[in-house]
Image (cartoon, rainbow, N blue to C red):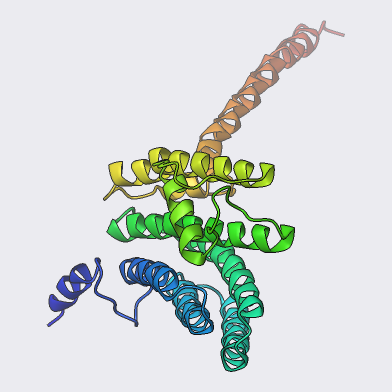
Length: 288
């Protein structure tokens, strides 16, 4: 029955989740995409904001769990999600759109910032580059776009100035659309940032999106199946990779050969001649 386990494990390397295991980034990727669509379709109504917070909060908690985040990180995150859901629910009952939008934006911004860091820390500790590693990298890519969509909304809310040049723009759907069009450097041009800060943020997102795809994702895809050498990951730790090279130089202990030059002690042979010198005077003792 043991051979069944590797098959089951390999079958779950894609999108089929096994909640008993970690690194289920295929399912996390599906949750992130669902969160994007729900936030875009539901809009900025109190109900839409509530659904966005619930789904986004659940997605982030699952990301933290599957990335094997430590309890001291996972528990506070779950607590923040619960508080945000409660506040969003009260906002839904009260019908205050602006306050609910602000709570949803700040909450999404914080979680979309922390989640990629957690995934990246987990990916760098993996001993082997696999499909799960690539899916985790793609999760980070989508979370970056989601993060900037929240940033644009927060900037518009704080500045009290429309973020876009185009009138009647500035909904959650517009921010998500603009963020991913910018991240992928598609650049349709139908929406344009109005302020200097908005333009600089858009340029930053575009550069980050391109560099991330052509470097991180491309590198991982090209090395799928390779094992990360422990020596390179622990090279700075004495006794490991670097330690082996240091053990070789122990050869200087061999040059203890200089102790061999104690041969000069052999030249104590001159002590031998002293003996002969002593024998000569004692040998020819003249008769009395």
